[in-house]
Image 1 (spheres, helix red, strand yellow):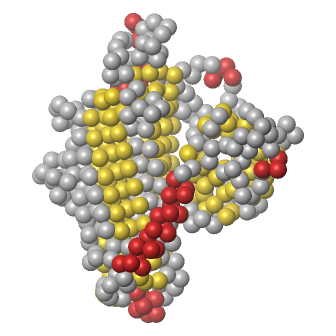
Image 2 (image 1 turned 90 degrees about the vertical axis):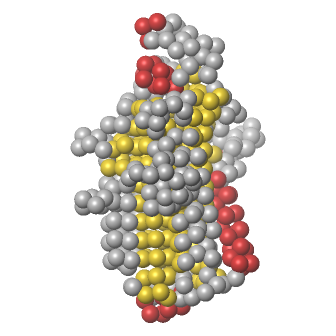
Image 3 (image 1 turned 45 degrees about the vertical axis):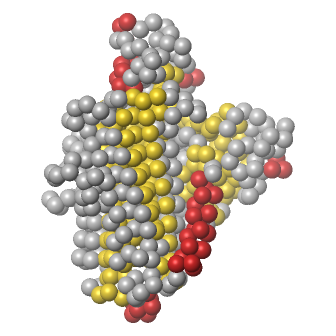
Amino acid sequence: MKSKNKLFLFLFSTALVFIATGFSSKFTAYAKTYYVSPNGFDCNWSQATSDTGSIDKPLKTLKNAVCNYMKPGDTLIVRGGTYHERLDIYKQGTPTSQFTIKNYPNETVTLYADGDATEMGNGIVFHDNACYWNISGLNITNYTGSGVWLDGEGTSSNVNHINLNNLNIYGINGPLTGNYGTEGIFANANVSYCTIQNCKIHDISLPANRTDRDHGIYIGYGVSHIIIDGNEIYNNVGSGIQFYGSSNGHNGASYCTISNNKIYNNHAYGLTIFTSSEHNSVYRNSFYGNKIYDLRIHDSSNNNVFKNNLFGSINSDYNVDMENNSDNNTFNNNCYAKSDSKVVYAHNLCMDFNIWQSKYSEDLGGNKLTTASRTNDVLNAQNTEISKRLQFSNFNQTTNFVSSSKTWSINFNNTIDKASLNSNTVWVEDALGNIFSTSLQLSDDQKTIVVSPNKNYTNNTMYCLYINNLTSTSGKVLTPLKMSFLTY
């Protein structure tokens, strides 16, 4: 059965944009593109002329463009250079009128903090009910709190549908003492349906050396339905990724997917899951070079699933550590690299992999690697599979979160060669790389492809729609593209 809110994709050159069936052409006419440049000029809206914010008359700061000019559906293109500012975002978009901030093609954009520590503590902060924002192509560095903060604090707050893509977040260095942590990306409280994809998050809080507080990505209490996919997360002082609840009874993150990431050389842990964080899926990630554990699960964090991961930190204390009533998780088809018998700590015991399998029937499809050379072979193979997926460009869509019966309609501006349309050029995979059975139809005018599931997708599961080697009737091969989505 088709979804009532069936979405359509439009392909212009190599960019795909999703819009809804009821999206009016009158509304799209009001969507504008603004530009900012370090050499631009800021003026108030009342002083603006018809060309204010144009490529020839750019604004100077992102803050002014976002707060005083942008409306739902607008795009802000940031020219190359360094911007010394903090950006606070409160505005709400819609599925069909999303906000976009991105770098000018092939230009390097850096948000860089200097000045008052309170004012510049965070790079980009989403507040209250901010929603439907796409942020891509930025470097963010030298802040003291978070590079990006999804702030869902407050009973009326609901930050949602924030897409962070192709960001380079590094050198976020917090205070040497104190109770507040430092993170590349921080999400807490009422935050849901957001994505972190194709980002590099590294070198977080190295001077402070606080392994318990400072992390690459920190997903706090109450957060749900986050996709963390295709990132490189490395050389952070604490955990590469940390899920954590709170001491006053709030549960940790739930229904999140961590997939196709390279999580390595973190000074403490690869992935930490704490405080009743449940129903999360961790698929096909490469963990290696993490000092203490690749995976740490504590404090009643259960019902999480770990499949097809490489826990490859052969010199760590353990590959996997599960303590404090956190033994009820599912492991399958993972590889563990240890030259000694300290593979897993679980059920209050240190054990080798064969004991974990035979006595506790865990990870019956998994295996242990005992040498560095064999570990490197498997690591290279795993990273090659991950890198293949990173070669696909992400295309924009109105939402990454759809019903389990979702049917996609993909509209192109050129006619598609019918002979090129098959399950090898348009297909859907789950997060483990398993092909999901779909039917493909091409419209009579050969400009629309309909992708329908042959059965409903599984709820709370991430999938990815791929387009590769599809050609137009003129013989042009389209750029490889992908779209991740999570079902509900």
